[in-house]
Image (cartoon, rainbow, N blue to C red; front, top):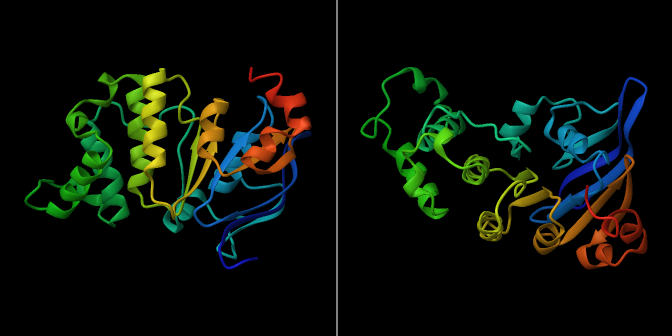
Length: 253
């Protein structure tokens, strides 16, 4: 494996009883790459993410992060190593404010998770608050900081969830349909946000909006019936006859 290869999946498969969802998936990702993951519904995209994030263990095969095997490593330990994901459905504490959600992430990252049960204020933890406000300002969300998450629109909540993923300082960020259910304006905001991410941050993006995913990705992985249908540079995959016939030409359902 090359020195710049951050993630390698080697022949992974996943069965649920007699149902084979993924089989013999082999794929390498280099540090800082932007990878789009596409395929029809039921192709195995989310299961693939679950295996990388540690939410599931593969039936066969191995997974390596910086050349160290993590196949059986649980998800919380992968987060500590820098593999972070977002979900198709928001995973926020909706009765807390945006700032409180962000502070919980920053506290955990800083090893101060238990201070939630103590008196917490700017005077006692100035660095945490400073980091939180810097992140909110960086992504133009400072006006949302004191709003209860449940009062925000779906698109705004998606923005906050991506912000929380970024706040963990990941090495790999796995985005699962980041623009699903958004208006065009909200989609444009997310796309602009993702363009601004540090170039050394590795991104994997599952996305039904082909214009978005092809615009953001340098390389594409196409899954179909649990196997790799195509893989390569975005423009090569866009022009692949198999992909057009089986996936792009039919559109997403």
